[in-house]
Image (tube, rainbow, N blue to C red; front, side):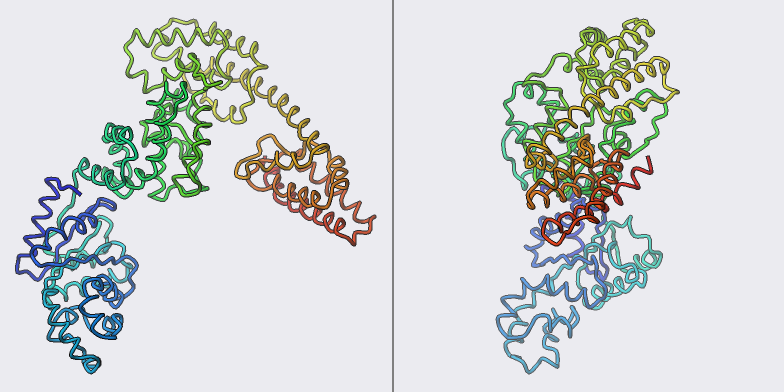
Length: 626
């Protein structure tokens, strides 16, 4: 990496150490991921090569004994020794590691151990003479804080390092995150072994440029974008590690984000072009958050800790008490300053960044369309206004611009253009900052209720509406919010029944008339909840009658369907689902008791009973907990 003032200073301190006559080691300390090892391998080792020194890095992570350390030293020395040792004799390198100490390994006078001196002795002694310069060896022991605790507590490792510097006069650098070492015995002996501790830092701009260049720039647009947002990226990364940047996380982010950014920058949809700058910044922030939280072990593929659960957004926005209620709240507070309008969750990007899926341009595009309310390729003006009144955008408006946009919001509201889930936020936008439009709140409440009722049939059902519109009774204007919310929930429930009837009729039609399409309908996406789709849409009698009229191949698939529809994560845990399964179990048991089942069709009927019983066992805990 390109050196900064601080890294130049570190280099000089290391060079002074190599040129000094000392029997102590030195330490380089910095938080994990700060680039210590990369700096030594790619900068310091190149610099010291002109002095005759050769550097190796030996990780102590996971070592269980001093012998294990010797083995690792030899593995790192192997490329240096390969031509001079291995090719002159038929002696296994690992054999030497077991019988000689590292000091003896690089001391020509003691090169050939007594138990090996008769094996190709002349060739080995000749090789030893060529290895004299290896006395100028710099060994860098990495990951001291990750050593097995008992080895550190017994000071066994520091004792071994001390023997190398005192008895063999070998130069040693210990690389560590010293803040992670709390062992008392280590702290007591440290000063006897380590003469100087260098606190390593890097200039972010130089390190950023070096890593970005190493990763590569797919386009100049991408180069310009990440450079323009370099400070924003740094601010996010510093939240991972107490104000320190983890450069491994930065590299991971850049490697993965460049594909995402390149796709967004290549989009030609007119509607998306209008919001591309805002979209790209929000997607970048989300990708950074996922990379950071993934790298520190907070999240993983299949375990997002509900960082997509923004059900507390409205309530926390209205309350003075901002105590986080869930992981999503913590994310918003930590990375977005508590402002939910800056945080968008993208499912495919989460799966991609946590190693569970490939990046899908199609899935990201669909999520963008939904989040930005793009309809038929058009970004509706009423949602441009709505988004412009989010916290981040409002802070960049003057008072006249804010009043203008708020008046537009009110006008669009009266036209009935907004979605059901938007009404609570709209009331908040219209009345915050001391009600600058001077609206009569009682009249506004009644008007919004009237708009909700007039447009009830065109709203789509929102399964999480109740959670996402929860309002604390201590919120300002609670007496106005509550009636609006109650009407919203009533309309949503009516639409739930309407939509459920349509879905149920479709399932019944598919099951009776086109089973292949029915199977496809339920299995299109096996990774997500089925929502309102369930086999309880039909009666147990119709399901069993359909089963008996199918080919054996389709009977097998119908059994699979029971297992899929009522499996964990599919969401079919309602009382009606349990009622359907129990009714089906009773019918199948009656059939089995009355029929001869000594054929393939009979065996499939027995399997149907088995699948049904397992499904009942799986959903009973969920039904009973409701």
